[in-house]
Length: 179
Length: 89
Image (cartoon, rainbow over all chains, first blue to last red; front, side, top):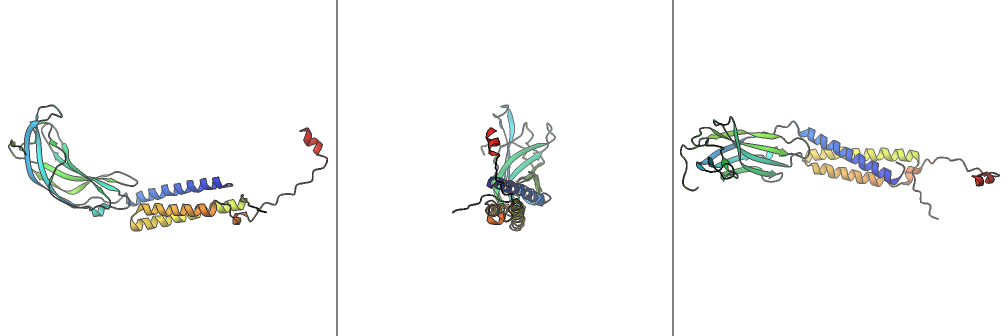
């Protein structure tokens, strides 16, 4: 502390240590919060086609087309340690080949400060609903769930499942006309 | 004419260190509470930066209050007859 430079250095180093402590305290203040909330999902249009999957084996695979309704209020999830939410809609189902299939159909980035009351009607999916075989036609129990990834200032990146899911059936026959 | 002092004495250094730690810690705590109240961590950061600036202003320049207890050095003794020895070295 005997020269201007050493004092400046000591102050800067101490400030950064304090900032690290405060960041950790901020993390501690939010780590035990419950980030689950309700989401209402519904499927509107449900079709299944049998088309060649050129991105994989070129064989004919089942391709689902759905549109969905989503209503949820995520305002309560935001606090000083949440910068954004990454929402994603997953379809889960079981086939003969696989115990558990999970297909992400849609996602959305929701920044803090944006309107967090989501009310979508008849939304199209963003990604293809490919099955890796012919498991979708006539499937009786496909479950849609909404989940989110919390992107914090500091801390963990938890994956949270919304409370509330929706199950639907695929029709028993392929749609042949273009959608 | 100008007698600008640039040093701090030992107790001034101790005082400067304590004061800077106190200011930064205080601003950090206040900033944390304020940030928690309005749920903006950025405000916590800004308040900590204000504390850093204040501490820099108050304790980095060698202000006169850090120079109140100078060491009483012995007066240099007049050297007589030793000049020849020094020159040899």
